[in-house]
Structure formats: C-alpha cells, structure tokens
Image (cartoon, rainbow, N blue to C red):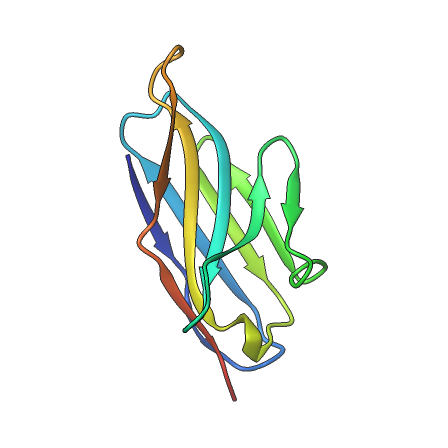
Length: 118
C-alpha cells in the first residue's frame, strides 16, 4: 500500500490550503483515514480522523475539515484561517484490510510541509 500526499506549501496567516492523500495498492477496504502533523521539536499529533464520522483536535476545530472520496481512495484536509502554529509536516495515515478477512494494517504517507508565515 502506498500513500501519496500533496498540497502543502507556504501560506500567509489567515490563508487556506487543501491537502490530499491518495492510497493505492492491495486494498480491500479502508477503515480509517486521518491526518497527523509534527512541528519541529514536537511530537507527532493527531489533527483529524474520518471513519463513518469525523473528529478533530481542539486546536483545529472550526478551521479544518477532513473528507474522503472512497472511489478515489483519497482523503482531504481543507485548512482555513491558518495560523503560524499550524506550521508542521502533515502526514496522512490509513488503516486498511487487504482482504475481507485480513487483519488491519496501518500505513503512513511521506509527509508534506505546511508553513504559515508572513
């Protein structure tokens, strides 16, 4: 299973970015799709998760929206009203089954840099 993330970049405070992460490979079903982030000198933290519903870290509630396109096996993160403290490398994360009766496997994307600065 491979994850290809895109959409990061440099944006001014108050701006918006949309991250995408497409999953490919031997996938029977995708149970969980999520975004994490890691700022310099800090631990990786969960930003948003989507299964049948979605959940968010308190720090991004009301500003970020996670969504998924099951046909495209893609998860998105729409980030609005960005703040300098949102600067981090953003990683997508999935939990999949490779067959109907397989165990669950988790995979990480390669990370995409988001920098919020004037």
